[in-house]
Image 1 (cartoon, one colour):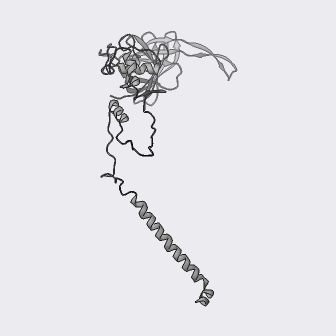
Image 2 (cartoon, one colour; image 1 turned 180 degrees about the vertical axis):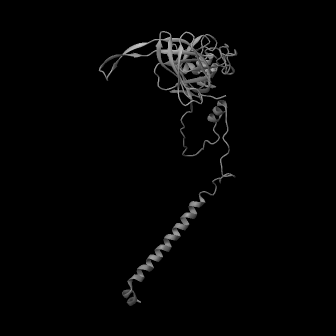
Length: 330
């Protein structure tokens, strides 16, 4: 035997390695069994293997859950542990948060209780328009928060801007193939018109006083010619030259106004925004349209359409305060 070991020492080494492997495998098996037994009393996965549907709760219900969470319990032991959880806040505007656990800041539909109580209001008053100015208490509070302007839900003279009630319902764009080419006389202008179905423009000489332009879109009448001249620098001649900036105004038979600039190379594009103003019921005031660059009035306050596209309309008031409305189709 000794001679065999001397001649074949690798067999002895392999035998020791085999026994070590058997011992290590036995240790892994028993360790796994012990580890698995630690999960015997842990609840299994619920039936369906999915969480239940989310539930919408009121802030009052949320406060109850915060004060008495079902998943937390106090364990009486020699080594008690504490869990520290950040207090919950509700964000109502940039850098403004309301602590829902504080009675001082109890949330009433995004309105702090302390703010509402200053005006003698209760929770049921938050969604009401108490002064009949067209704005709820909630809307007045949020406007005060956003604009830093003091509101009073009991005073109809103090309220958010009328433009915040506008609804942008429709975008319309129309190209007019009418070009103002030249002033050809004291009371005459040259107009190039390309009507529907025509490939080329047709030249017309029209009287400024009572000129009529017939098109398939309607009949246009010349109502005003504004002669404008301006000195501009022309690098081609390296000197000041006079530039013609005259404008011509036409009125269509349905009342539509078209403003044309002289020597404009492309057809005039008119962009129009259609609105609904729910605070009025008068026909023509509740639903109306305004083209880009035009003025309009809401309850005696004047505004101007600054820019219109198919998704957003930009509005400015006389104090240059800007409003942006996203389109909400009917």
